[in-house]
Image: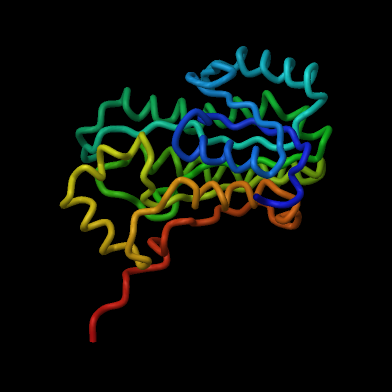
Length: 239
């Protein structure tokens, strides 16, 4: 439970599973009213469908009187391929969901967030900060999410709306579980993470919900790594 969220109204895109679902659970435990905007959620919405998001914003305004928190957790991965073999359609899909989807939700909910001096938290990735091999489309898209977050923070500061991002490291979710079924990959990744373990969705959610809460009232424009130390550098070498 995180203080300061009782009675707040929150939308979580991609909130039907993984990091988004963990965010929805923690928000509810913290006393917020949570609406899950997901193809498989309470409000079935595709973040690439701006008209559907506008309609959802209208319903939220009518039924709840406003919006305090927007968490953009909807996202897609692309197959592991070297950049010279990456189909243009894979790159386009990664950008449409991860970047344009985030733009769509921010624009659709902007009037509600401005009216309540709300908070936005976007889910980026450690790939936004250090490139991952064989993931050019995902890396580029998440890098754009981090850059977009900085622009949102500047453009919305006058309205009192804060915008931040979290950059998760290797986290076990339904979207990533296939990667971790590969024991060679999992062992190599674990050795590379200074804390020495794969992360849980609830750990990422804790950072996201903190940034969305009044406890982070002076924080905006930040992309916070929650990655077990991956972006800090290589683990210590033996002596």
